[in-house]
Image 1 (cartoon, rainbow, N blue to C red):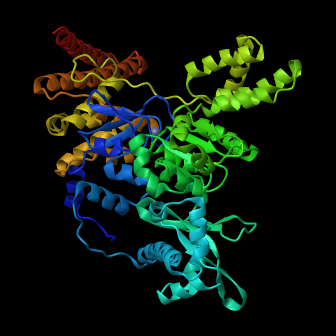
Image 2: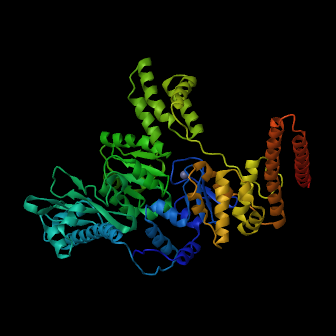
Image 3: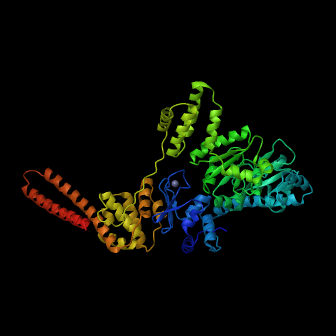
Length: 609
Ligand SMILES: [Zn+2]
C-alpha cells in the first residue's frame, strides 16, 4: 500500500514507537559512548567508529561520510527503500497500522504500478514454476534431479524451487491467462521476442531458482538445465528490477541467520547454497556468478562484516576467490576464505565429509589475504629477480590493509619469508602509500557542556552558543531573542543553525536534527553541528546561564575590539587640524577600552569561581 502523504502525527508515532538504537543495532554493532552509541559506519568503509546514534534525539550521524537522519532515513539507506517503503517497514516494526489512503499523481502511479507489475509478474511466474514441479507431466525429470542431488523437500519449499517444462510457450500461455501480458514478461526477461511478434519462454527444461531479495520480492531467476545442455546455468537478464551485480542468491532464506550468527558464507553455486542450508549453514548465500562484486560485498556488509567465501577446489575457483581480495580490502573487510580440497564443491564436500567437517573448516578459515600470500610465494621464480617481482605484486595489496598494526605484522612476515629486510618492504610500502590518499577520520572533540570559560575563542563561543540552543531551545532561545545573538554571530554555519532553531521555536515546533543537517551544504559544517548535537549537556539552568553569559561576553568583547580598531583608524586618518574631532574620538576610545576591560574582568572573575 502506498500513501501520498503521511500525517505528521502518525510519522511521529512510528518514530516514538521505535528505539533507533535497537533498529540500527540489528545492522551495526553499537557500543555505548557517553550519551550516544558508536559503531562502524555501514555506509562507508572504516575501521575506527565514526558512526554515532543518539537515542535521545532519534538520530544517527557519521563523521566520516556525513550520512545522517532519523530511523526512517536509516532504513531507507540500509534497505535501499523509498521513503514510504521505509515508513511501512518502520511502522511494522513499531506495530503501528498505517491508515490506508492513497492519492498519487498519474506519473507516480504509472511508475509504481509498473515496478509493482514487474514484481507481480515474477511472483506469479515463480508460483507457476513451483506448480509445474508438483504437477507437470514431465515433472519427473526435475524430481529425479532433485533426488539425485539429495535436496530435501524442506529446502525445495524454502527456496521456492520450481520447474520450467520443455516448452516454448508454457509460461507465456499460463501467464496470459492470469492477465500478465507477454510484454511485461519480456521486460523482466522471462520471455524473449521470437518471429512475427511472438514470444518464447526463456527458461525451458530447467530447474528454477527464484532470486528473492528485500521484501520477499522476486527480482529474477536462475535456471539449471535438466538436459545437460552447454549452458548449464542461465540467469534472468538485467531488468528494471534486477541487477545481477547487486543481488545475491538465497538472501531471503539467509538473512536472519546472517544477522543472528554475525557471519555470511558465500558460495558460488545456487545448489551449493541450498545444500549449505540443508546441512545447517543457514547464513549462506550464493554470488550469482563466479566473481563477487563490490555491490554484493556492500550489501552483505550491512548485515555483517564477518564474511567467509567458500570456493571450489579448482583453479577457476581459486582465481575467482583471489579476484575478490581487492574488493574486500577496498571495503575494509578482512574476509576469510576456504579453498575446498581439489575436485570438491560445497555440495560434494558436505555429502562426502558431512556438516562437522564443514563447520570446522568455516570456524578455522584463514584470511583470504593469507591464502593469497601463500599463492604468491608458491609461484615465485627463484633468485633476486623472482623475489623482486613478488614484492612488487604483494606491496599494493599489502598497502590496502586498513589496520596499521596488522600491516606492520605482515611486513615482518613477508620480509622473513622472502629473505629481505623489513626496511625494504617498509620503504616500498611507503613509496606506494604516498600515491594514495589515506582516509582521515576527523578526531572527535567532546565539548564540555556549560563550563564557564570553555570558549577560548570567538569561534568556540559561537559553537557553544549554538550548542546551548540545540540542547535547550526554550531556555536559550528566549535569551537569544532577547539579546539578538544571531546578529552577532559570524560563523555562517552556526548562525544558520541558530536561526533555523529560533524559527522553529517561534513556530512552536521542534526542529529535527537531521533536517537541520540536511540544510547545511558544507560537510565540515555538518560535522561541526553534528558534534554539537551529539555532545553531552546537562540541564542545570544556572550553569547553562553562566555559559551563555560567558559566550555572549566573548562576542561582545570582539565587537568592542572591532569598534576600537575602527576608531583608531579614523584617528589616524583625521587631519591634524581637526582637533575637536580628534578629542571626541579619543574620548570614545577610552570609553570603549574601559567597557571592554570591565567585560574581560567579569569573565575572569566568573572563571575563577
Ligand atoms: Zn559513514
